[in-house]
Amino acid sequence: SDADSEDADTPCGITSEACTDGLESRSNCSEARTIGRRAGLITITGSLTGVGNDADPSCAGDEIDHFYRVYLLSGEDIELTLHHQLDGFDGVLAVYRTNDACTPSSCDIEVGCQNAYHQSGFPERISYRATHEGWHTIVVDCRLTPLWSSSNYTLEVEFACFGDCGCT
Image (cartoon, rainbow, N blue to C red; front, side, top):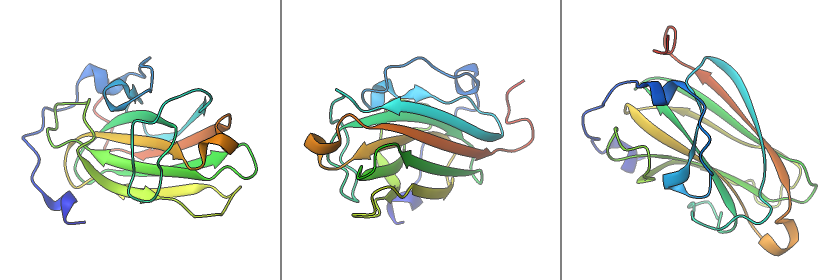
């Protein structure tokens, strides 16, 4: 996308923070839970019960949401799959990158969004190749809060990083 072609600030490199799973609340972009860099499939479970609305992805996610972040090098691939654990849950999956590679707490530029409208029970999927090094935020969102606000979900993150992922 045009927004993704904008230049980001100089990357700060892979830090120990990028290599370790975090304990952040997931409640907004500045509290996105860190997913540590490691190759392979990472499975995360969560519940959107009682959480707020702090994101408004372009593909219609305008309700309750959770935030996760991962540090990507330019050219690395990430595959995301959001499974809904309640038939009828209309999930939304979005990816943002920060305009400043060293600032993990901002959701500046949307680089992917998926909402298979009215496809309840089907997973949302995004395949993304990073065009800039830096922090990227994954948003698990949904539509129509009153009916589906208590839904549990599983987020699968398949990370194809370079070498040992820069974490030793």
